[in-house]
Length: 67
Image (cartoon, rainbow, N blue to C red; front, side):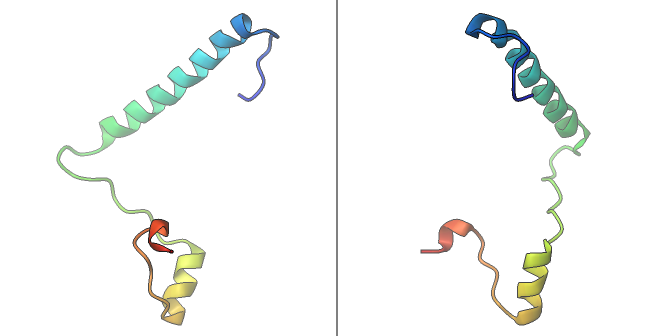
């Protein structure tokens, strides 16, 4: 939802609030399905990460580690 249906700040506020509530509800549902006491499963590696693994290039823990 990028553009509000109505023009003006007051009328555009309601669609923004509804969109935010939808995201909050989806995240709450996702977290509710997660087993208690366990962290989320790691995501599978991307094609870029697979390529680096095949070439023997070490994988950094974070992009912030690059200086």
